[in-house]
Length: 264
Image (cartoon, rainbow, N blue to C red; front, side, top):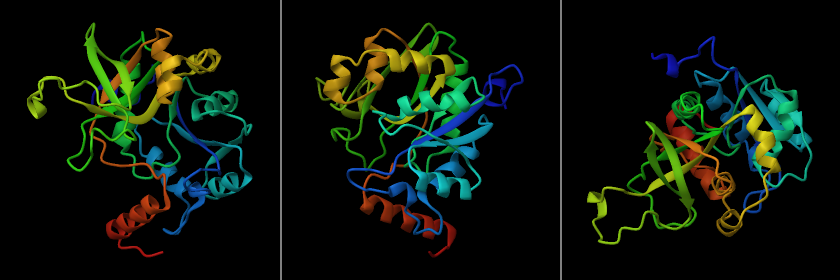
């Protein structure tokens, strides 16, 4: 194991924070769905705990029901305000009670997130001192449609020996003008909603004014780029998917049963 891919006594303490709220337009209460025998939030916590970098996992929520479910799973919870526009803002409030120099934002609806991807994204930030935040991009899986606007695309480049994100869009970017397909030198990558921040950047982010492209695309990471700040980019294969609907949750439960031989 390289020093970059393991814990180092010289590295800042890494804490994963899972922001969560009860309300969801397509699947209210999804973080408490428990057809596997434990709530969805518990599955997410278990995945984050497998990261080789993460020293602690914390849940930040505005709902007492999520607090009770998480604490029953042995997780420390921080109760936050209910008026946060996004998970980054909720995490920025929660870090006042967290001892960590590097903060990982793990989405609360990602019960199959590969822990190795957390490690790769943390490593991308630790090895890029000029970047205040890092995120992750992945190749598309064969069954995924790059033209689907619900899958965010990412364009990156190696700059000064370090890979950085250039842009994010719901549209297909880069555009293959000559229709070279898989042979194109630059091909679409999907963005995986995993973020790793330097602690001090969170206060900076929430103080930045929302930007035109951020509002147009409804992608908060564009605020960082539009304000001229770099985003370190990790590459890794992500085969998991978030849970946005009851149908997606049912599919997850079925995969969980097949993999564990369990029944709810």
